[in-house]
Length: 317
Image 1 (cartoon, rainbow, N blue to C red):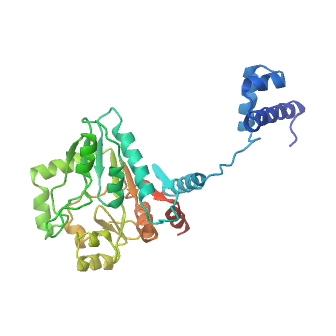
Image 2 (image 1 turned 120 degrees about the vertical axis):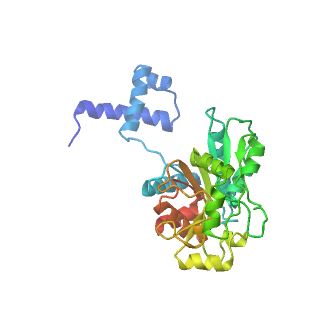
Image 3 (image 1 turned 180 degrees about the horizontal axis):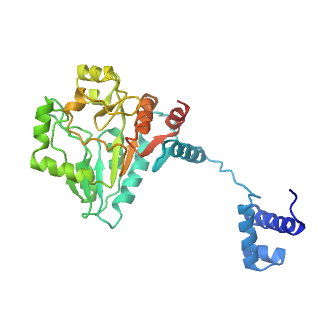
């Protein structure tokens, strides 16, 4: 359909105004004088140029591709939050980029005046994020651990994060003073009924933000490397279909929490399914793609921070 002459003339003027503003770099006052219209009319013409898509923009920067990938992931998995950072060609497995973005959301959350509860998992990405948080004085907030931080030999995890973040923020904090795994399901139930432990779990249940790592369940699983599970326990979970874990909770390729195995003796706070409060998984690397995608499919997380290469692979599967 051909536009009426009046409308065509109006679009011609909008195109001129748009070119003068966005390409030639003139101010709206200058455009008004050039087109011999009022400043308000010049402003409306520029807005019309954008609304009618008479002029479009292409952002020539690596971050543009990352933003597009984040939008696709957010739409595909119905995420509440998604950040994709550029991949470092010199260090494709580096967690520095995702740690920086995770630190950013931790800081923005902790700088709010409203009392807030932040719950943390363990792992290298989460620890790296905590290390990047600037010192903040926010004693009205609470920080709580989602994970028991004692390994089978009685040693504490090097990647514990709650105490470190509390040091940097002066927030009240609640560690999870439990072994990662108990020796039996019965012993686990007894420990979880202890009043101080029950109180910590009650705080965690009310968390406004959960930040967790996502681990693969294979021969290079971090829970194995860090000594939280034995090789036999890992192999058992793999036989049960485990492809990944969040705060120790192993899940299959569909993101379903596996029944039995180490999950029956795990002391960590179980994921809400589907995730209710903002629950962000931070992970990067080809070895973690299956675990990340499964966690997204199972709605164990509703937020993701990853890098460009990992995001592309997730979307291709």
